[in-house]
Image (cartoon, rainbow, N blue to C red):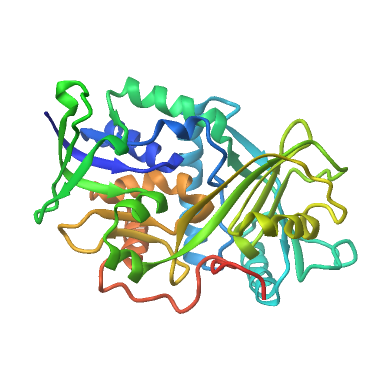
Amino acid sequence: MQNLEIGIVGTSLQAALLCGLLAKNHKKKVCLFIESSVLVRLCRQTCLSFNISIRPQTWKLNESNLSEASAIIAKIGGKNALTRVSPLILCKGKSGGRAMAHMYHLLRSNDYEIERLSEQKYPLTSGAYRIRGAKTVHSQIMWPQLFKWLKELGVTIADPGEFTFSFRRDGSVAAKSSKGLKSDLKVIEMDRFILADEASILTHGRNEDVNRLFMPIQTSSIVTAPSGQNKEKFILSPEYNFCATSNPDGGFKVLADAPINKFGALLADLVDPNPEFYLQGKAVFNTLKSRDGAPIVGSVTPSSPWLLGGLGNYAMFLTPAIARYICDVATDSELEYFTAHTASKNRKPHAIADYIGYTSGAD
C-alpha cells in the first residue's frame, strides 16, 4: 500500500505537468492516474500561449505566467517542444466577429502584436486577425519527455482503468486494484484528489456537479494527407473551437467541437475553399465545456475532489499558478482570479463568456 498526499487523474498535458510541479516545486507525494495511450493517440487538445478571451483579468493572468511556464515547458520538453507561431484567427459568425473586435482593441491597448487583416482578402468572414509571437506546445514531443521527467521525480504513475476509487467524506480517496499489480500498487491512499481536465471530470465527477457546471459536447480530431497550396501554419476560429495546424509534409491536424461530417464544410470555409483533403486518421470523443464559458478551478465542497476545467488552450501555461493555488502559496492576483472561478455552489455564473465562441457553433 502507498500513502500519498495528492492523486491526480487526467489525460492532458497539463495533468502530467501539474503532477510533476507538485512533486518538484512543492515537495508533495503524488500519483498520476493516466492512460498510456496518450503517447500514440490523435491530438485532443490545443496548447497555445493565449486563449481567445475577452476578459482583461484573464489576459493579465496569462501575461504574468507566460515566461515562467514557457521556461518550464522548454526545460522539460527540449528546444523543439515549444515553438513560436503567428496564428490566423477567422470569425464566421456575427457574435464572434464583434467579440473578436473587442479582443483586438483590448490587446492593442496592452501592446500585444495583433493585426486586423483586410476584408477583401477574407470576404466570407466577419473578421480576420493575426496574433504574432505566440507559442505552441508540440504534444508528440512533449508527452515522452513528461513521462521521463515524472519517473525521474519518483512520481507514481498508474492506469486509472485498473483501479476503483472510493471517495470518503473527509476528502481522502482510496484507489484499489485487483489486477495483480505490484503489492505496493494494489492500494493507493491519497489525502486529496484532483480531476485535472474535462476527460477525468466526465469519467469520475459527481453527476450533480458535472451537470451544474458543465455541458456535454462532442469533439473530433483528424489528420489529413498532404494537399492544396494553403501556406498558413496555424488557423483558429472561435466557432466550433476550431484549430488547424500544418504538418511539415503539408497535411493538417484539425481539432474542432463538431462531428466529423461537418469537417468538410469547416475546412472549405477556414482552410481551403477547394479542399481535397484525404483522411489519414480520425477520432471522435465526448468532452465538456463550462456552462458559463469561464474557467472552473477548485472543489465543490472542502471534502470533494478538485475540478480543473474550462481552461481552454492556455491550460498548460496556467499550470504553475494552479499548482501554487493548490498548495496555498498563490500570489494575490492568482488567488483573486481562482477564487472568482471556484467550483463551489457559491460560484456566481459569469454573465459574459470568458472565451469567444465557447458555446459551439456559428450564428
